[in-house]
Every structure is written in C-alpha cells, then in structure tokens.
Length: 277
Image (cartoon, rainbow, N blue to C red; front, side, top):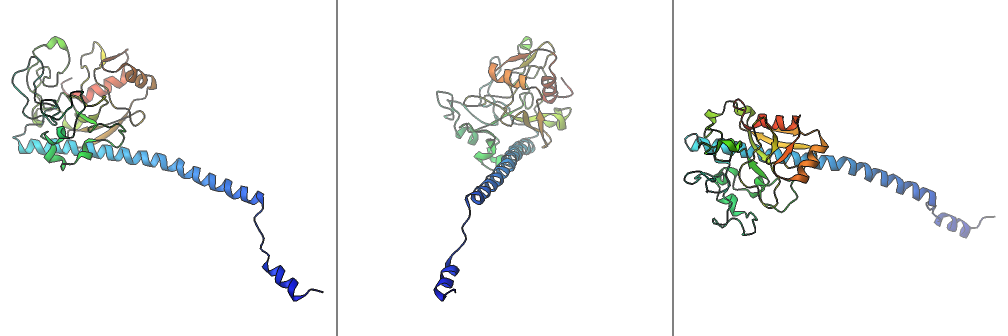
C-alpha cells in the first residue's frame, strides 16, 4: 500500500540526463559551432574584400574629382614633392606627401598619418584615414594603396634606356589628364602594395617585352586575389593562379624577374597604360 509520504517523494524526483545524452548534446553543439565558424570566416573575408574595393573606388573617384577641379590635371602618383633623379623642378600635386622633410615620415622610413593630410587627395577622400588603409592589411602602416605610376605624369624620361616609368616619366607618353588616356576604363588607378613601412611612389612593372620584371608587386592579403580600381571608378578583383609565382615574388621582393611565359605579368602590364603598351 502506497502512503501519502511515498507519493510525495515520487513526485519530488526529477529524471537527470545520462552521461551519453550529455555527450550527444555537447557533440551537437560543437558541430553547430564548427559550421558557424566555417561559414563566418569566408563571410568576414568577403566583407573585408568588399570594403577594400570600396576604398579603391573612392580613390579613383577622388582622382577624377580632383581633375575636374584642377583644369583636368590628375594627381601625381608620387608620394612626395621631390622630382625623380634627372627631373626638373618639384612635384606640386603628389596624391600623398610622405617625406622626412615634410614631417610626415620618420627618419626610419615609417609613414605617418600627416602624409595623407598633406596630399592633394585628402579633401576628396572625406578626410578619412580609414579610406587609405585596406581592412585586409593587418600591418601597422597608415596606407595600403599606391597609384599607377604611368598615370598623372608628363615629363619625358631623360634616361629611356632605363626601360621603366620612373613615376614622373612615362616613355614620353604624357598622361597628365584623363583625355590623354586612350582607355580610361581599362587603365589601373590604384592597387594594394606591400612595403615594410610605406608604399613609396607609384606602382610599376617593366613594360618592355625583354623581361617580365615585377619591379613592384601586388599585396597578397587576400589569397591569390589582387584588388585594383580603374580610372573610370570601377573595380576588379584579379586572380594570380600560380602559387609558385606568389611565393617567388614574396620571397624575392622588388624587381623579381619572372621566367617566360609570364601570363600574370602580361595581364598586369595591360592595365598600366592600355593603348600605348
């Protein structure tokens, strides 16, 4: 016979999870977390890539707006006011002004935020430091991007045997204005570049067919993708398909001469000054 006391005790008992059930629940939670992380990482990377392209689009638009306000003259890809060796005078319209003399670079070669403020594009970039820095760039630099060394230049190269644009020279191809660009919609404006502390002067590769010379090379923050903007304000995310090339460029540094055939170098060359080279 069951007493009232026995019933009270039975009602007070609660069934607990077994060890097996707890392990199953934990395993399910771990699987769910793993799935979330697997999806979240590519999404974060895609978001950073989108912002990087947005920054470069803003740079291209700023170059065009500056040109409109300055009698069609584009900003210079130089990063200080000093003309290259052999040049005459000074650069009056560097897009950023990064130099020890200007107080915008340390003697050790570290670029300071003041270089952005003293460049001619600063008012056209909403005076925003973040617009000059790619979210894909995890370094401590203040600037991730360089301008195409073949655009916004006008003097004649005094040393044509040098076979490269020296930032102020373009093999006699004057490109001070958009009207001098044969194909603005296919001409590179900006690109991410890797340097230790600063991206000095314009981004350039050799444009003669005797050597596939990566004088500068793209920043590989986004795997094999290379993000660029074009002079019409559009952007592209290019892919370098050879992991060996990326590793070789990163290991060698400046002026890596790639053995022929060199499809990636050839594609990048087509963006420097299409219609001329």
